[in-house]
Amino acid sequence: MGEVEEEFIQAPEHRPKPDITHAEGIPLIDLSPLNSQESDTNSLARLVAEIGEACEKWGFLQVINNGVPSKVREKIELASKEFFALPKEEKKKTSRNEVNLFGYSDFEITKSVRDWKEVFDCTIDNPTIIYASDEPDDEELKELTNQWPEYPPDLRDVCEAYATEMQKLTHKLLGLISMSLGLPKDRLSGFFKNQTSFMRLNYYPACPAPELALGLGRHKDAGAMTILVQDDVGGLEVRRKSDGEWIFVKPIPDSYIVNVGDLIQVWSNDKYESVEHRVTVNPEKERFSIPFFINPSHSIWVEPLKELINEQNPSKYKGYSWGKFYATRKLSNFKKLNTENIQAHHFKL
Ligand SMILES: O=C(O)CCC(=O)C(=O)O
Ligand SMILES: [Fe+2]
Image (tube, rainbow, N blue to C red):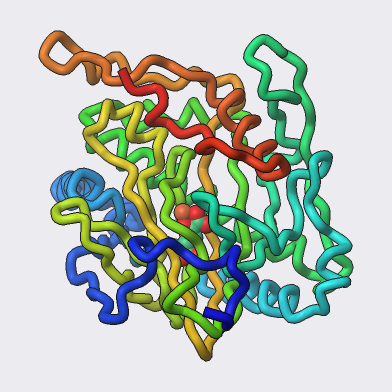
């Protein structure tokens, strides 16, 4: 076991399997009905039904003809490679810390095991408002802004251009998800005014012990929804709802992977579940990915949507403050936790 340090080694039951199962099932959804001006009501209704089915059966889907220009994606992928290729001392000039929660880090722990990765985080709203502390009664707020490295000099511009495109895609998807729940198109979008959304550049270096370590341990995304772009190396695995099997998500050029996060699970009162996923590493190849985490305002109280609950389908959650949840999560990056990190399922009734 000497090939990687102890802190990266997963317990035997969480190690990747040598024979990966390829996902035929993760639905591939064509968003072109949204792009044409006079798209007929039938094609839109079909799209809404496909989205609903994917959210219910998989919690994951991939979208093509998504309206995101390839150039915007190519530029951020290139800039990300340039940034992570820099010497560690250079990258560490933008290290995130308890004051600056956004920036570079080579240290993240998921479910008590260290991930084989480096990240660069930046927030979307400038500034982003969050609660200053995780104390329930402390109303003090603080403003978060980004730190940008000197190299590559265009990193800020390409991230901002990418974020603009992701916002457009976010609102298309939130509209489709709302409609698929039988709700007005704009039912969810209001939660995202003064959002706490952020994006991350992920770098998974080649790993000498891919059978022992993971690039990112099993987890669910705590926010509303995530839109991810991955390169052609592959490594993302999703836990299939039907049988709990880990399924490899095959890279598809120009597609974006979308997954339901814990908040959509709560809002939909468990109709759409947030699904576990993880990232395996490769002995020869490094891998890059870019998740865009869509999170509501710190002021949002999270609970099942009233229209979706009734006597037959009572609320499955007690409400919680997104802002306090988020502050607890963000600050926990800088604390050594002996207990499980805060999770949406802790609010289950
Ligand atoms: O790198 C990936 O493919 C997945 C990343 C992810 O799940 C996350 O950062 O939450
Ligand atoms: Fe994730």
